[in-house]
Image (cartoon, rainbow, N blue to C red; front, side):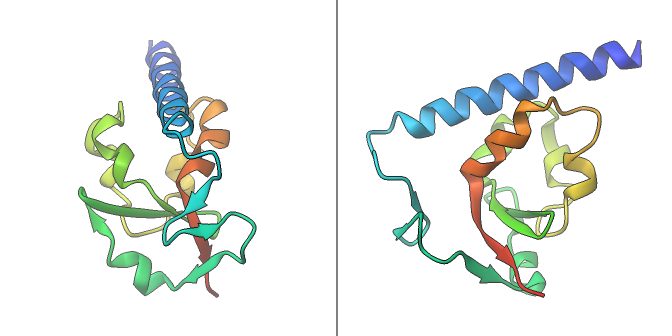
Length: 120
């Protein structure tokens, strides 16, 4: 029963990421830009863990996944798991992101939210 619920939730998360990705690509901006209007091919911005930690709210939510920083603020309200997405807001979400509740498609879609690298 739990496995079925997990599969359904994974499917819903994948569908929402797919819809979100299509919406972002159809906004008319042909050249993908990062926050701050930096071209995609520019050197990624580097953020410290303490800097990411400041973005820990529903209306300003950054997460770290495998030493990459993502601004997921625009997705928080659409997350099918509700406020679970905020459990690691401003912190490392790698374990939760790679949990069984997510379908493999989300691994490609997360790139739409990428803003930089975690500095070591």
